[in-house]
Length: 244
Ligand code: PGA
Image 1 (tube, rainbow, N blue to C red):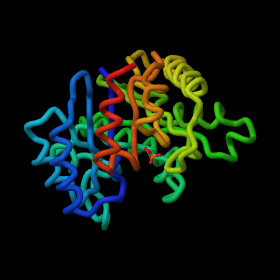
Image 2 (cartoon, rainbow, N blue to C red):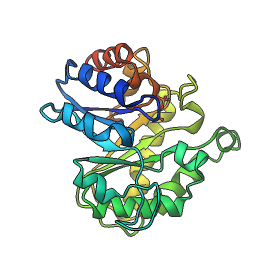
Image 3 (tube, protein in one colour):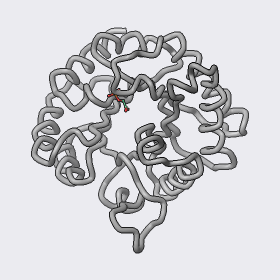
């Protein structure tokens, strides 16, 4: 079973999201676990379009308080009530553009778990951190601060997404992605979490390179941004995911 997760980010307005969700219904989902992460404004419509399909839906971002005076925010519980299955937590665009700290990510992760959603914890180093040789230190910190001491019964999904490869067309070498996936699983074991961890790769995944990542045993799938918001690109990714 391969995970193909589609993060539509802020690429599509409501109408465009509806059109794309309807096209997704024609995809060949054999052996595939698919989830769409829509904008909040399209969430409900997209959920209704996908409701009789095997495609799940998730939140791109949540706030950790359940309810209250938090103008502009949407809680994990509200997404759960609205039919979400998953929530992205710690996406690099949240960490870097919106200055979310490891502590914020931890609070978000806890509230996602409390609401009964499956978290997709995103981790990854920036270009500077990579060039300084700090990739492992940074990613380990992100993993440990998010997960240490937590009790997780259900699935845990971690997306390794080097920040410098997101939306840039620069790919992380599959050898490094494999090494990081192994390390991520080990660090999670070391902090005493004895669960199956599903690791995805994200960052400029295209139809041309998807096989490189899916052929790695430690990597269970991909989290795709730009290419998932264009139907022909996504369809080709889905097709190419079948042959590895
Ligand atoms: P990208 O984004 O596929 O556009 O590089 C990946 C992500 O942000 O999850």
